[in-house]
Length: 445
Image (cartoon, rainbow, N blue to C red; front, side):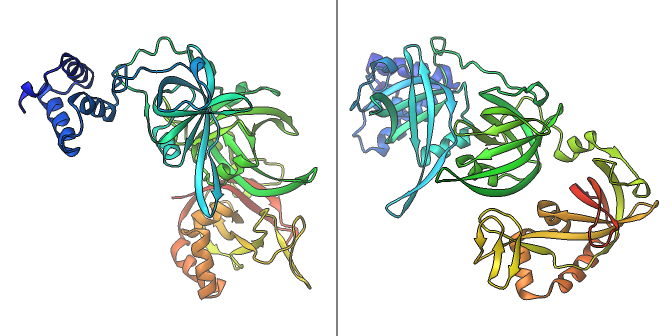
């Protein structure tokens, strides 16, 4: 490419900065700028093309096509086409909505610069970009083409449909941005009545969603167990955060932000309210042990012969010798996840009343032997799916096509003789009065 095409002093300076920050050669940068100009059929100036190339490379040139950046303190209702450099002080959980038959997504953030802080709202694809980029508290954002709209007489930022957001832009001076104060806690450090908690944990166990009504308002709540290498505690997601918790799986590595703590019946509990957010597979400096490893550290190795109801959480290694007869599922309420019963008037949930379309929860009972004795090991939900080798939706299809005993016969062929590492608790079966082992976690050898 002919370098003489770039005649202005400003363009030459822009190229030099792109070369310095990106590490690319001058020839390559000039080629990219030329390609950008050709794409716009000559309607783009050299400066404009340089700015677009810089933005695609994540480089801040200190201005946007001759336009300086604004400060948050300068924002006024109705302003448009403004650019800002900000630090993220808090990220709320994204929300899905439906309007005029169309589905959408939004996410609110609190952002700040040297002059103050405000709320930023991202929409639709920008929410996806935020999640993919792993934006969290402390991230730096370069925002291009925002508009201002007041809410409760306070100006708030919105990223326009043709705006852009660069995460951790290269070549910028962020020294004037305020720091995002906050500490990432170990679970053993948590005390009751703490707020704005951030913690990286493993999901150990998920419980069904429950719906409730309080003061004429309906709500949702979901409990799940989480652990790190210092402790295991119960976490509770409320209302909007239930949608995020429902998508979790056992053994997921997650980061919780904006949570608070309360004293529960069995110790400190972690609560996820309206300020909280869940990040799946966050960027971490070190990897936590798997859920199975964390549980095993807290479980005592036992032989089947020595199991009793007072043993607590124990670990057993054994071989599967049989698959017990059963229905492979029981009916649950599609709303709250609670067990339903068949009555004269149909399927009834104790909390929600009549259930027209019940869901199912997988369950399987296998006979295991470790050389000292045998016991029936019972797995529910995700653990049942692990043993079966397929999920709930596939189980539904198979149950529609064939009786449960036929599926069990296929499982006999696939599982008998397999070694299992199981962690759980022993309890007395109320119907057979026999000891059985209820699985909290299981791995096939």
